[in-house]
Length: 502
Image 1: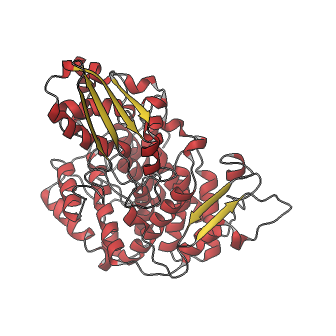
Image 2: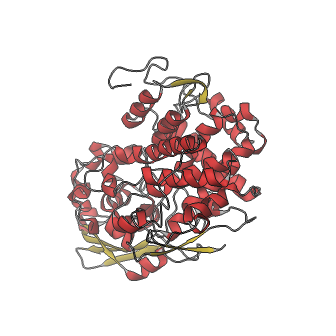
Image 3: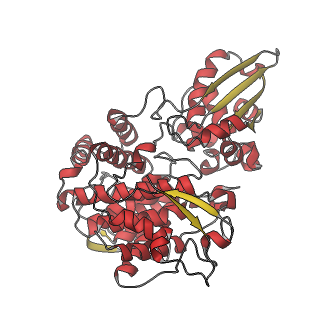
């Protein structure tokens, strides 16, 4: 896979568009290469995964709010909305908004970590919505999703956003635009302009994941997907974009990222090279921030050696820079130690997560986050005894270029009041491709059935799973049916509410 160097260029030294990163992304998107069998299988897995977590969150407040906004924008032949009947359709950008929020709400779908963070499954809602509105086939959808995963993962490998406190959705806008370009078989120049517009409109700060984390954490990626759809629409009409969006002297890299002396290296497939990046990504077995996945599994193991929680003096986690500074005590967020914190904050507190996982020996997307659970006196005591510390060895493993060696775990040291220490470590989650029991199709299906139990009918479960697993052979009508319908939903599906503007 060729590596592309990305630098800032002054205006008096014009950079040919063919040498710009956005153009190279567009060339990858426009390449008509077929999707491999392995990638096809994984795309199907991730569509199932997204549907699982979307339906599990279908009546949570942020999801209901997004859906209420979306159903104010009906359109015959538009996109479907998770939970809604398949005979009701809505403008693609609004279907993407509602579905993207539902997918993201529980922080329970796929992830890729490298120089930056990402949830590449966030690409699925906007690209699926456009495919449904514009009558695309299962093969078209596969090609679009393979591109979007490839572009987002390659950008995450090469360009770090979080060190400049920029949210990772800045890589999502361009990947969605590129994926839609592939889906619709757009020409390279139109995709190039779309990628640039999408990036320009989706740069935002990481305050959405800092301090008192609000429901915006769920809305941020769906907003990026919605903006990317609108960017592609404008460019299909002949509009242009700020150029060069990455390398310009007043653009993203120069003023928001590393500055005028920046030097980034982004890998991208060459002409005719299969897009396989999705195979490097991984999903979650537990509903919490990805860097906690291996640590939850580790806590389940460590707890077997602790019989008396009152006998615990202190717990320290030695882990990577990212884990320590984002979800650990290195973040210096008092909210991460607050029993009254929001769910969005608790699932980004490794101290809370470890305390509950150690005590309960399970992790549940609802039970583990209830106010009653978070405020339990013995849990708060254990929680407040936990701290984190960066270990350079774990930071190095986090950034290892070899995906088979890359690790997101840590070493846990439990000091008892007796002076005894219990020490154990785990590099990757059990469900990780390199873990003890990597997720396969049966695990994705089981996750779907577990999370949708009691919410959808058995017949709807069978219908959806059978349909999606036949993705490569679906015609346009079949793609239009890629949705999970809920028998009873907490909104009037025919009439928008009157709480807002729409």
